[in-house]
Length: 266
Image 1 (cartoon, rainbow, N blue to C red):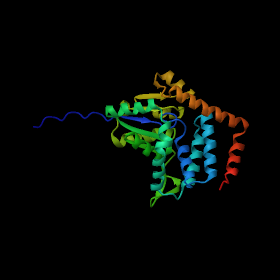
Image 2: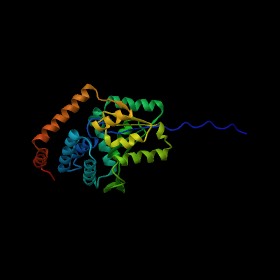
Image 3: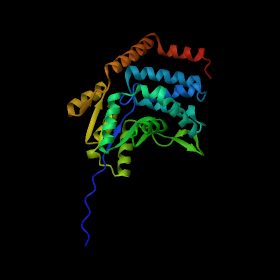
Image 4: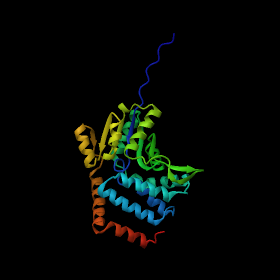
């Protein structure tokens, strides 16, 4: 009779939010700028993206704002090929995305990979962005908002919900069930109060560069906290907020409308 096989160790994963957790600013805005330069989206769309970035810098995430951005992005890229979009994201990795990464969060990703954990980037950003970033970081994969695809081209409709708040937590739980990941031994990292449900889903939640509401929850529940921003990062973030506050003070809507008019919005 053969000896009983040794029990299989549970599969453990770490789930990382992207914007303000892994990188400074919003990943989708970086990609939108690159698409504009290549003539793949119009100037009104980029003006909209700039305004949303200012609001994001000033006030952080808001469920309705995330949904509006996703809907606008979906309409703006409809008809583009998935291959072409992937190429654009690859091209902006080195000059525009990599310099925005928080070194300490990247170090934590590497720590998990050295432990043998799976590492997943989980964000409301388009799935192509999260997947390209995951590839460059050596992570297992990316979770993001998916657009419907037909014959290799993007359609003006979503393939599932925007991966934000409750839906991000659902995506993490679904992936864990599919891959046999033990969430009770897994980790999750985020800066946002809107990711509390994802953080609650794992045994090791970590608040990274936490916003005010998440910091309050983390203190109350005794969650680990990680300040991944260096002094230079904090100065850059502060500068971004100062610019955003100034524009808002003089009328951000007027500024963006003027920008769109000056560049001849389509």
